[in-house]
Length: 360
Ligand code: NDP
Image (cartoon, rainbow, N blue to C red; front, side):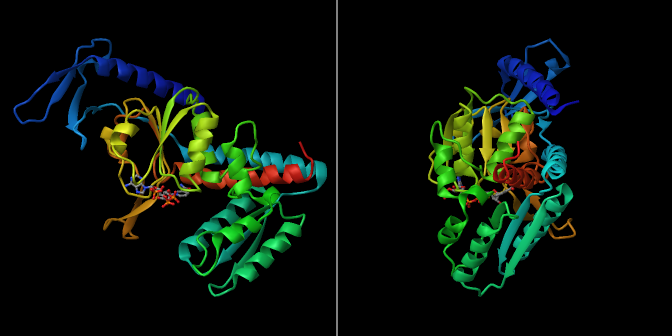
């Protein structure tokens, strides 16, 4: 089954659920917990029971307990995209003899950053992108990093340059990111790219990878965006803000929730599409989700888990267990947005190489 077909069945589920919810009747119980029963006799869902939870804002939301959201499988979509990229790279190589190149600059000894860089290199190898790597010690100077950027800017075999963040605190991140020439800014963080993303009738050369991955998931699952209400939780330069701009470019009506937002739950519950990029484990509860909404969870948060060999496990910003009973489709963590981020980096690098070599 194609992912689009998978989503249509999710959408069917969703409209069926909407039908059920409109037919819910309130049955108060002695325990104080209220149960709902549907009056529908249309399907086996007719006997569905839903518990009602009072949210912090005092608003009541229906929690359907026996229907699960379609899982938006970022891992398998990312695999499919990587295969498409590998095919394109072979075609380019056969026709021009050129392969795309990606340079990664890693400063310092952070283990998580080293792992991300290793994974990016592996991903490049798997699709035929040549990778270049500059490893600098924690105490290197900003000038040294700028020199590497300058030499990669001048090297025609390098089509994309990525500076692994965060940088050590003695370096000025803005100076360093601005030094990457816009044609090689595969992370899409150059203000000129972000500015173009924000403006009508302007095209950025690159879109930041994580938000691009979120929108790609919506497209590949056939989720309509035009005219829909969307809420982005988080407004960081690398995820929340560009995600909101992208949704707006696709004609969604977008609200942004951040740490100073009043009534975030109420605002989020209006959304047909929720993208959460906050970094707070399980912050978005089931009661925040409008029945049938599509939820993209960008958050990657380690939480203690004595049963895991590592002593922790990764969870998203969204309480998956609750939200998956309300939403029509949802990304898991891990296996949702994460794999898409790297796939989009490869896609941006290929696009840069095609542009640099006038290859269609
Ligand atoms: P930042 O810390 O840069 O931004 C967090 C945003 O969330 C800020 O805008 C902040 O608001 C907002 N926020 C914080 N607390 C709350 C709250 N209680 N209610 C509402 N909004 C709040 O994080 P990033 O954007 O870099 O990352 C967010 C998450 O996404 C992290 O878990 C990160 O690990 C993950 N991530 C995952 C990627 C992937 O590939 N899957 C890639 C990048 C990030 P304010 O602006 O007001 O401070």
